[in-house]
Image (cartoon, rainbow, N blue to C red; front, side):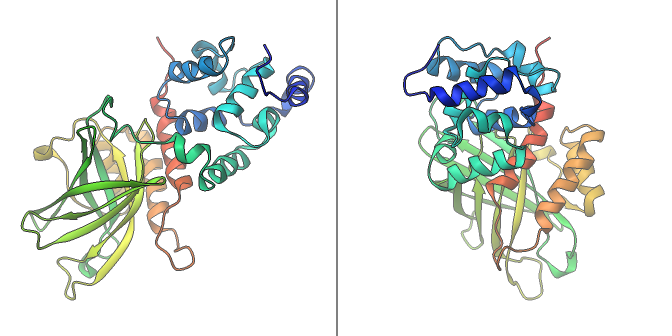
Length: 323
């Protein structure tokens, strides 16, 4: 079925790729995972629902998609690529979706986001939405220690995000020397970021958090964390990157906090938070690389690309075909 406004020449070329040179369909599993993340779909069924609204005759189905994401087959219907490209607002259309390498594909959708096109509007957090399925999310947070006495160690913190449908309330805490330091405040949204000043109960201490807005899956948040270093001889002003993993439960009384020593310490903490032993090590390395990456032109920042890269790894674990 030809959709109104669809470039027929482009669709003809896409059909030729499917029929005559199928090997030109590159990196499809990775592109489909990125598509799910960017379009805020936690399941294939949700993606199908979006496609049906665009094209009621779509042949995309969850059962087929699980095979495509495993790389054991690929769509033979060129219209599927055209529909996915249109959903993403992808410059280059179906043929680019088929033939581009995953890095070029990721760069293209990132550029669309920076220009205020599809990505910036496709990743609103379900936090802040009254119909959110999860009113509260708890994250295990990892950031470099600020105190000179703990140089090289990683601080484990706890972040809880709660919404009443109108505002996002954030609570963050760390434990130093057996003492818990809690902070709370409101988050505000701008572009693809959310940020806020969080203060201690007595209002005498404060920190600033600026994070990537979560995808609907919300498995990982990356961002920048700043404030004054406590338990430090000079109480220096500090800023660093922070990585936050969505965890199950997160009961504060039993939440592991304190310090992690290197990759092994982070991996052990992730294992305690529910990741299998085999998966915690590669994620620990990914977090360590993100936290230790050199500044960009003197800036301590984190790109949405970094967050997507780590969340894509997590999403591969979360996304499983139905029994």
